[in-house]
Amino acid sequence: MSRGVLVTGASRGIGRAIATMFAELGDQVAVHYSSRREAAEETLHGLPGEGHVLIGGDIADPAGAAAVVDTAVASLGTVHVLVNNAAVNLPSPVASTDYEEWQRVWRQTVDVNLLGTANVSFRVAKHMIERGIPGRIVNIGSRGAFRGEPDHPAYGATKAAVHALGQSLAAGLAPHGIAVASVAPGFVATERVADRVTDQVRAQSPFGRVAAPAEIAAAVRYLASPEAQWSSGAVLDVNGASYLH
Image 1 (tube, rainbow, N blue to C red):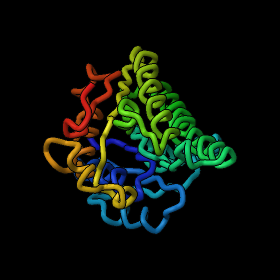
Image 2: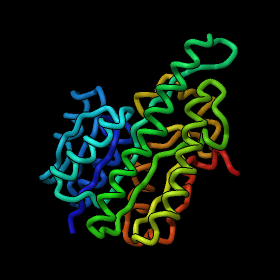
Image 3: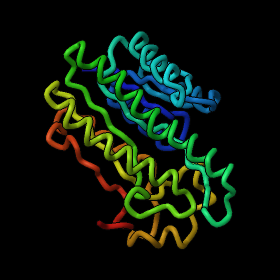
């Protein structure tokens, strides 16, 4: 059966790989973007199959998050799977960041990474409960939630919070047949972090490389599957053994 799938932050990188994977499975995908419309259109046009839609919106704004979900439901008919991928990763090392910039970075990061994820999840979960859908919510977290992000502390902290949010939702939504889990990638070969993927970074993994976006999408595919209900609440490390805990 074809499912309706909402992928936030799907204009490129990991989000594009996830959207493509679901489309290849025969699902109908809502490709969400915040500001990169041209890239999101490229993602949309590259998806196999029919019935996919493009949805713009700022999930950092509570009304914007609600509108994204409402549009996805109206366009797809039903949302069976939500993948929370949208995030910002802004540098703010303590030693070289002034207080005003520190406040700006933390506010923006919390609004997008944590509150945006929470609000989109809330609206999708309500939709699933109302329609009796045994849905799936998959969050894209980060290895940085465990390993630490000295140059991007707000990112690391919000991703740790996203993992915790996922576990709370997993417990709260299980009586409704909804499973919630998170993926915690290490470095992934995307445009956003291309300048940070050095030989030293590759050497963090005993495989001597960083992940491909499709490898993260493969983890999402499992967690979004009907067979993954008993993995609800899990935080799945997908970091090539670059950080073990």
